[in-house]
Length: 119
Length: 294
Image 1 (cartoon, each protein chain N blue to C red):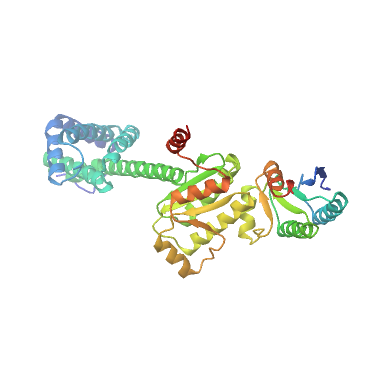
Image 2 (cartoon, rainbow over the protein chains, first blue to last red):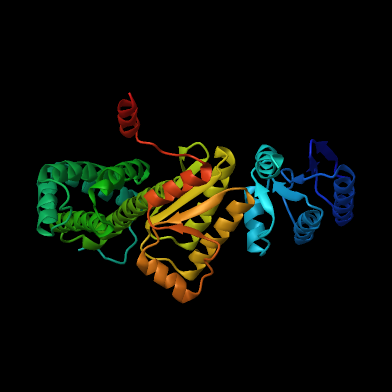
């Protein structure tokens, strides 16, 4: 299932609705890069609230997206990581060192606005 | 004298049992006193007063004789559970409870043997199985009750051990008191992460002033908790790391570079307020300033 990407002012919101296959993840990456280029977005929020499980491929791909968008001048914030998912990720050694995270969509938007909205 | 090997007919047994019960009933006062005296001599049930011992002794005695008579331990089971419930909080130990039941058995068999010196084996046949069953029932109920109390307390300790408290909008505090073992650390993580979500926390202060020691597993677990909290958008401040723990952690080589540590809880809360953008101003000082200006 493709992930819808919404444009909200200078930011993009990708809200993951259900478990992703590897193809979906790669599709999401391509879509995000295309949209960032088209809208000249300054921030991307990836909402993973509905994911109960986050495997290493998904985590690594999200990290990849964050790094790629940064090269296009857009900061990525991952929001809505569930408690169980968070701890499982840390135990697997995927602690998203260089990726911004926030509690939920609202927090993520606030974070982006505080960092980039004014400039 | 009766032949000890002869199998007495059931009727004869019943008759004898009835006689024994009648004897124990008739000598109730005397035997009960004898028993209470021997409990005192053996220094059992020291947690109870003499009157309490005597009144419990009376109930146990009556229950005991009833079990001998009816052969059913149902009523005794209920009583034993009730008794255990009352005396466990007073600090009565298992050996004491077993001791008094065995003493009563001793007192009663002495009395019975004295009364039927020629029939010892038959008395034994009738009396012993019932007496053993009684001792068994009382002991089992006492131990079961104790285990229930212990389970209940463990549950209570588990629930109390990791409170997650909100001090300010978006600021949580986790005071940890006592030894952190693997299980408690896991529970702490679980409660903290859940607390972050429900309270929408942005900063969490974990205070480990009350933790005497920490091992490398728990330390690594703490570091993982800090990372997981960050994934949920909350920063963690650890306060109250004692110098011993600090030394242990450095010696063990736990990577604490990502952990934001502050000396004491006060400092931790101040740091958290700074992160959240709060400024605390004393009311007295501001009003003084206002007066100066006025």
